[in-house]
Length: 115
Picture 1 (tube, rainbow, N blue to C red):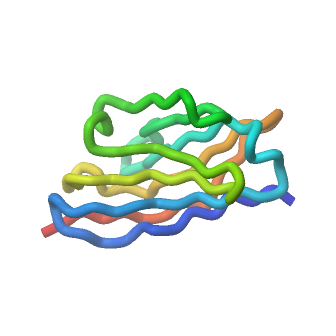
Picture 2: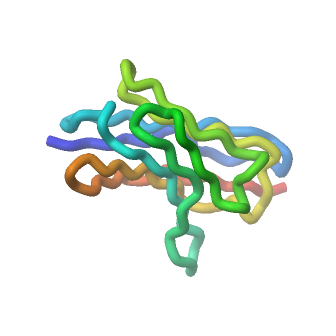
């Protein structure tokens, strides 16, 4: 059974940091391209960052460049999203996505940035 489990969300003030984690199981994690998406209330889900199976290639949405860092530890079957200088517009549910023959989604973790 495939599972992607996100954690690390929470409520923070503008300018603070959070690190999200996504643990995968039930598929070959080291062969999966991985992504972080987010969805704010009333908006469509948007791609935040992506990372290749080896971790050597990373891409970011313009909104994330310079503030967010995507990484992965294949031995631990875990992907991360380090978020710094958080802004109220970063408030959303953040989803982990994996593509390894099929597309898999996690259940999401809420990030709220508010003063």
